[in-house]
Length: 443
Ligand code: G6P
Ligand code: MN
Image (tube, rainbow, N blue to C red; front, side, top):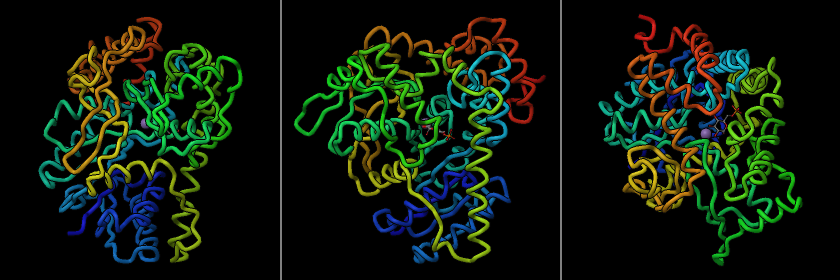
């Protein structure tokens, strides 16, 4: 039997990278049909036509289609990739500028940029999952949509029956950077890790002989031998922002040399320095809008006009590989190990069992089996508890349209110094999110 894959939010500029991997690995995925869905007709037309031309030339046995109709897309689906961004990068930019106006970082997943984005994304994702449960209840749903920490908390609690995995390419991108530094192939290393999405730590990095290499990396960092990662392991993460962000892993490890932090902890360990480091007038979203958002669509249009994608620059970076690797591990029952967001259920012994955490899991046809991480130290546990409190209250604020819970969530976020700052920013976020947030906020 052949599989039908669907990409929801196919208007994303990350889609071509996923298409390239799907084409390369069609046989292994038993891929028979691929449907692209987006609510934006112009974007799904361009990406859909690009896909049709690309697949005709690279993998003609795949039946392709595109649509703005969700039910039609999900009909007969076996694997659904979700990567939506309500309000697109334009709204992401607005979040960042609004947070900067109040002197805070407004990154799309960390700080109150993430809060703003979560309250837009969660209702849309819940609607997609609800529809999928009606139309294709046996399909596996792999979600990339951000902010993954809060999206996963909302989905797993609302639809525990959904076969859904909430994933992120960040841990693996960082692992590949570390593997490159160690000059050891990534697949020969075993990474032990725990945390929340965009908020975690590596505790051990074992080589094939079972030797933990983390102490060596720590030594190199503390002795000043490792001050910069030479090159990012992910071909797609080569700009200045990612170079600085990955290098902040070293800075974070030097500051707290017990476990090696995930790069996005930079926003919490070094919030004030991050504010100094980034240009407040030209944010990350502004950069994405003026680069990838233009070049990817220009390329789609060029291919459509030429009627051929043979010389297209499509690349398959970590982002595309990772989601396809997980799908393949399910399809072929490979039981490979990936870092995934799951209900804790005891994986971290001394952390709320009824909370989503990010831990290594074995992935096979039957689903996932989280690795038991054991007990975690006080420092990480306390940071995670405050962050988890923020995430849970943000989800409740979103679902209930509750300003009280929103303000509680906001005070728990480590980037927010006080009620006064948090309230002023929240009032502005309410304004800019009127078309997206729960209507109850505005009654
Ligand atoms: C990493 C994160 C993703 C996020 C992306 C943003 O890959 O894991 O969750 O979407 O960064 O990248 P961008 O280039 O849009 O800033
Ligand atoms: Mn991520």
